[in-house]
Image (cartoon, rainbow, N blue to C red; front, top):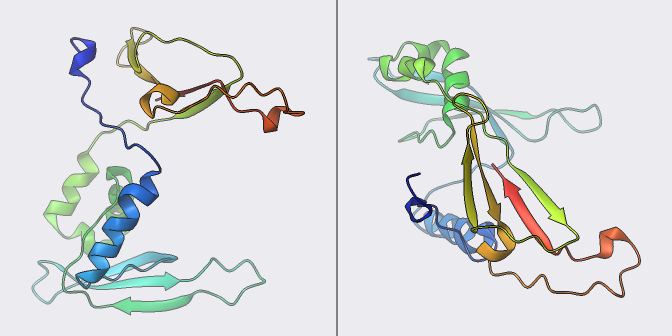
Length: 181
């Protein structure tokens, strides 16, 4: 980042699930999209000319822990397949799927290099002032950096509760919430 104003992340004011994902899911369902919850993809089959996916094999249900019935095996024959997963997950799907590995556009994912990201939230019992709501940091090791966010200020949260009636740490309202990515 050349300056603080170059930071281009926009933050949702409220719960992402309620504000963004739930309305999006409802709208997609209105358009005829079917979401398959508790479903794990186990394999793919290609169409006759091997240009696309014609079948998706899945297990539906929780993993068998000895107390539940085993997951159901299901085959879907979709009109279209959307791989709405991250690069690492798609890479693993291609590596573990002989069918997808036949397709050059999927084999290219094996060449992607990426970095795993670790995010940690710190709930502090004292007020901490940060220079900005989003603070980029680097220079630790070659190619390593981080950003820490003042979540309370980003979301305009009221963290001013004085905690005088709290008898345990778990009952206290944090005075500062920082997230480090």
